[in-house]
Image 1 (cartoon, rainbow, N blue to C red):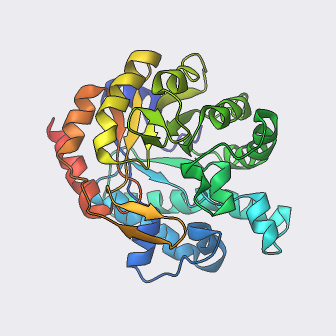
Image 2 (cartoon, rainbow, N blue to C red):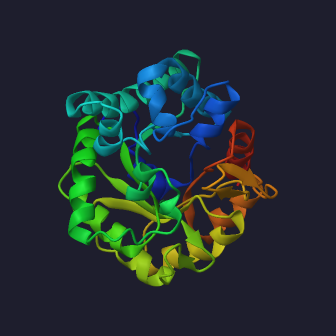
Length: 308
């Protein structure tokens, strides 16, 4: 653990709700940065790290307590396709944590005195494929193969000493099982969050079954959902709280729908800060937003939760 904030995140969850940031990609794109290509936000770790710091800082200033690193789509395999070696990839993964730490330092210098934390993002196998398959799961890999994929990246991120590992946008129970194996013994707590459709994972498994996998895993301090429709959150939060007895994490997207083939969003946004109170009442203790949720929405979430 980094010691950057006191209390630690697990203690803070026991005391009340913690505000997460919103989508990193939309914040970077709003600042004029091109995220085209398979690496998505991770490309800026090498090309423009200062932009990543500023994006994190925007969320801290908006009221977020946690910044999630630009490592979601970063992995040894993805960087290797672009000719980046393992040593440089490991450096960039560690840098993602350091950039969030730099945002904390600037937030402190700017007068923000509340506890601030850094979550190291570890996206699913489908994120590295960059073809939208994280919204389907069932990649044709065994649990052992998925564990071998995830463990090296998690080891590098853990060594960079984030406050928590964000095992996020998990589409099915096979990948969740692999991640829960891979996170053991790393010395850093984790949260596990599924991407869901209604009352099931994206791969179609019942949420009770999915959440139960994390119930007895000591490293997991919270379990829940992300990158789903806001309307799917409350049921999932209640289910996760009932099945696991752990604090629940909830950070849906805006409600718009991503088309992985045409690479465009469609539909109407349905995320509002006012929904955070209902999620908090249902059992959520880590609350924020994912894709297409920006600093303005996170500021509204922070106001709602702190007022409650």
